[in-house]
Structure formats: C-alpha cells, structure tokens
Image (cartoon, one colour):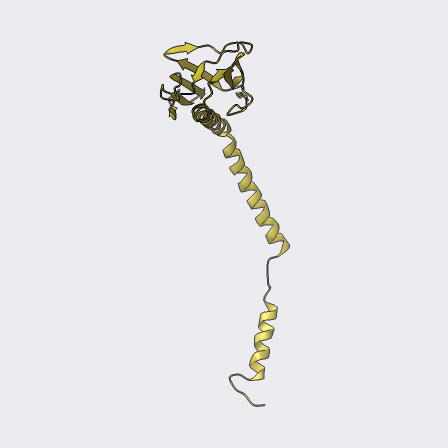
Length: 180
C-alpha cells in the first residue's frame, strides 16, 4: 500500500477522530446554564424594584414639566388663555372663554391623577397654595395668550427625592432636582 502525506489512510484517521469528539452541549449542561441565568435575572429584577418610585416620580415631574411647557407654547400660538388647575388628586388644564374658565376641549395634556404617595406643593407668585376643591373652576397658574405666565414653583416629592418645576412671567418653564 502506497503511503504519502495525502494518502487515504490519513484521511480515514482524521474522520474517525472527529466523529468520536462530541459536538454541542448535553441536556444537563443546558439546564444548568438556564437555571443560572434565571437566578441572576431574579436578583437583577429585585434590585430594580427598589427604584420604582424614584423613576415614577421623575416621570411625573417630566410629564408635568412638558405639559406646562406645551401649554405656554400653545397659548401663544393659538392666542388662547389657558390655566393650570391643581386638584387634591392631580392636575388639568382649563381654557378661558365666554363662559369663564372651563375644562379645555383642546387642552395640551389630559387631566392627570398623581400617584397616592406623591406630595405636590405649589407656590404661585410667592404664596403657598393649598389644593382647592375639584369643584372650584379657577386655575392656579395662568398661561396667557401673549406668552406671559403666573410665576410659580411646583415641588413634587417622595421621601428623599424631589423635583421643582418653575415658571417665570415670560413663560419659561424649568425642571430641576432639589433636596426635599
């Protein structure tokens, strides 16, 4: 039998060696990896739950900030007088028309209820305001068609975290984290 470096015996030997080595993972190995991944994900999920209220507070502050900013722009562009009304449960926007202040059908943001754990403190033109009854049809913050706005500071807080939404007479609205 002739022998060479590319001979047939060499090819058969390589094939038999490759077929003996296992290809892939066993079922036990796959199950162990899946269990480890599940345990790690459960710990990660538990770690994130502790910050749920912090994230929810930041979301509520950003939403109120964007709604007030949008109201200032919409009042200026549509030449309408709008108002921000805070209630014991949340807030909404009103529009001034022939019948006085009414809930705006074209309001910049839908009425919103605060989460039960959120504390909201509103100061308008230097005076701290209590949330009025929901039946009182008068806004606390006026957003006028000329671009002016009642100067205000709205602090949204929960435990060790707080955000301040502030507006000035020129209609500029800002959002910043503050110490509670």
